[in-house]
Image 1: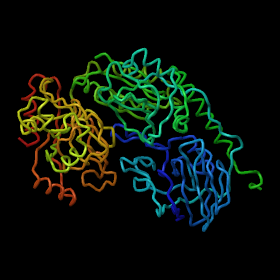
Image 2 (image 1 turned 120 degrees about the vertical axis):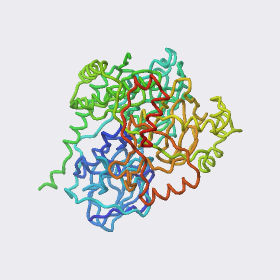
Image 3 (image 1 turned 180 degrees about the horizontal axis):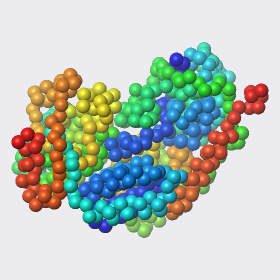
Image 4 (image 1 turned 90 degrees about the vertical axis):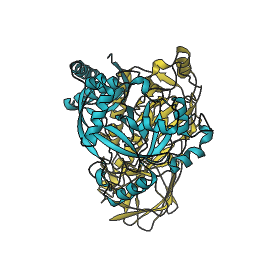
Amino acid sequence: MVMLEVVKAGLMVTVQASPRAGYLAAGVSPSGPMDDDAYQIAQALVGNDEQAAALEFAQFGGSYRVSEATLFAVTGGAASVSVDGRPVPCWESHLLKPGQQLDVGALRGAMWGYIAFSGGIDVPVLLGSRATHVRNAMGGFEGRPLETGDCLGLAPPLTRIPRRMTAIFHRASGPIHVIAGPQYDYFDARTRSLFLSEPFAVSARRDRMASLLVGPALVAARGHDIVSDGTPAGSIQVPGSGTATVLTAERQTTGGYPKIATVISADLPRLVQMPGGRPFRFALVKQDEAEDRLLAERQRVKATLAQIRAPAAALT
Amino acid sequence: MKMRYSFGGDEHLFVECSEEMSLEAFFHTLSITNRVRDAKIEGVTEICPANASFQIRFNPDIIHPDEILRRVQAIELADQKSEPLIKTRIIEIPVYYDDPWTHETLMRFRERHQDPESTDLEYAARINDYNSVADFIDAHSGAPWIVTMVGFVSGLPFMYQMVERQRQIEVPKYLRPRTDTPKLTVGYGGCFSCIYSVRGAGGYQMFGITPMPIYDPTQTTSYLKDFMVFFKPGDIVKFKPIDRATYDAEVEAVENGTFAPPIREVSFDLNEFNKDIDGYNAKLEGVLNDH
């Protein structure tokens, strides 16, 4: 088996794969990549299918070696990536040979990065997915973040021909769109207006579970305790402190705080990747617009994945 | 009951049976979610009951939101005539109340508590008008509970006590959540008891600990080999107070693979239950004790 050695662990490096679906009623959070678009692009760049797993990291990727020649790709943002000290670009795949060291430095302009290896990380499928959920100690590599010295298996690669994107994958700018949350009516007109007009920013208190926002305190006129109910991805729950808290990939499956709004699926990757302190505003849209935006975004990602190919020279 | 439908997100339908918790609201939730599951609607990826509400996740590429709304509303209409009757199981869960591990933890986070001078048990007993912690434990373990939701983290049950509204225990959560809670702590917040399936942050009051694992992602625990999560909504739970010696013996039995929680199949009829709550609970306990 091809072995992947963690020479130096990055920050919060976990094995991630397609979210775990169908076990919400047992409290099993879907987990999966924070930025599914960047994750899928990384996987496509090394020729992996949907079931394969890759590494996700927060801000700093770490150093790796492999036992056999393997394709790798780094996506998510702009990072300084090098092979044996020689810089290589992100968002395209490169060959890493045995004895060479891959160094993935700090990520710029984004929070979450992905390192995909051809074949994918070979960890067992648990409840339909290879994704890690750290608090549940479930999935991935021993249900935990990677540490220096860990050795992981890689499945046999489907290709060793480097690939690149023929068009840049752009992210939209402008407001983060939300739809009214299940407890929108817990907040009075003034608070709703503050929520939709004042700037917010992601604070330093963020992880795979949630991002706490800096912005106006949101007071729920009807109180901050509800009978606990379901918390979909993008839920903006507001505890008694008034701090808007966006729930993300490794979120709790239920919560006892009112949810003022839900970030639409098309905009959630953009929000989780937002650098800390950068101001943005929320804009309220109707359910059908959120749906249209999601389907359009899926088409866009699909088109991006479809144009990933090996350069012509490599094919001849 | 008047259901409130909304979209909890662009891939979710959120249905609230009631803003207030009650056994009636829970039974509606359970009954409708079971029917939605049986309907096998194409494009539905999750069906999740939660106390007095439920959420359905769907893939908008496969089913239009208006269509899922229409289908679920039709199911709800059909369900209105159904009797609140379920086939379920009753399980006896041993609890070592006032144990040293939750005690150590609650002392560590005393400044986050409403009453730093008392323990969580002393505080809960006092604000619920019990004369002593022993009387309070009698009330907590005296009448059965029904699992109304499994969530927050994997396998964590929220349980609602099967007693008259005026006899229900009410305790607020900690003022600020703790950053630590021992695994298998029996906790309390609002009108719900819970069992923390994993170690970690938490805001519920801590009353004791059970030796019985309820979640095992390694699937090595003898009774969790088929599925790693023990509880499901509708399970009935009876707590049994145990002492340190029994706790230690049962922890050892779990490790040896010889621990088997007492479980019996039962039917639960909410209408019959409401006619004579104490009598009905006594019968349930009789089933557990093979009477």
